[in-house]
Image (cartoon, rainbow over all chains, first blue to last red; front, side, top):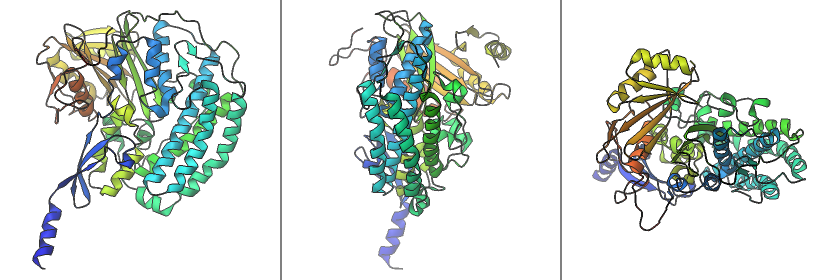
Length: 374
Length: 151
């Protein structure tokens, strides 16, 4: 063996450090991962976050509750409607407002549409991360149909801001029910395409099965919720365990796998789209009559106390914790955002895998960076 | 366990603790020195098994700095709230619970970053979102000259 080859082998035993991000396409935003490598093997990952930290929790302390709703859109922008709902439910719980069945049902349908479009974008970008360009076009093509439905009813496409304390901003558009039904009919046919293109693809399966496994014990300890947690067998669906809005009156399955690898985190999201369609189908034909908004006082003041509300966003459990001192602004408002907590597990599950697998693992946790930074 | 049974359980482990039945959960006020031992018992005792640390919220009460822990059991589906306070605003210190719940590593770093509460025995306590030139923005006496936010 000549000296040069010996030196190369010696070098491979040394760790070296590279930056992945903050402008790396597969981090889906400004997330910087400082990766220690030994050859190709990942030894340690240190996430550096805060590039778009806006201090939403601090801003909330100086604005009123109806204003806070519009800030929550900007956390997890793919679950915008569900974030709005979380704050509204907390305020309604504190004021003991009884909202009508119509509001509950419309909110549930909207939440599920939001979940579907979020998972569609996950599928689209995840396929592209792993080298399947077609996925991106197919995914966005279908997502556009949901965004059009949003635009017609809410005015906004992504940051809908459709909820307000006490109900909804406006009633649904007359076309809403028909368009949702058309979409479900269309998407039932389109979803098997997703499986044909990506789920059954040999290259994709080779790159995802058995990669980045997370055990149930670790999933609970790291607090990994949402589809990522459920792929490890952690039954954490808030819609099942603590139903809010109209989830107590629909039948659906909590998607649970026990393998906990990248492939099953992906599969959990695909299955969730099917369950979401089931939920919408049960509700869309019988939206109850009634008022779409309860009249609230012009200045909303929460009684002194502490209020806690859980909701299930497309990425996991979002908790809103409000401490009120009786004023029109919260004394302290805390968001437990699912992405921030899920990021904590990335180092643990990526250790020992190759740097190329890191893209697959990080993608399967489906990060939305503004939700991490807040 | 329901709220009352949980309260009784806490009483049986340490009768000095202040227990309040909140409108949603049982709330226990713990002195900082007892925090870790109580948390350890709540996690490890088979009757309660609080294996999921939901969130850690740091709060500036004005005179005191406080931290609120929401714990849940994935086995029994019950929730408890631990509250602790320290009146030391210059070098506030609490025990870290990272040993018990891995998720605490990130959550405690966030609290340190935004409120300046130090957690002893934390494996890697550094600023998270902001760099070291910032103050602690979630404190009520924080003044930001550039982006003036007034209540």
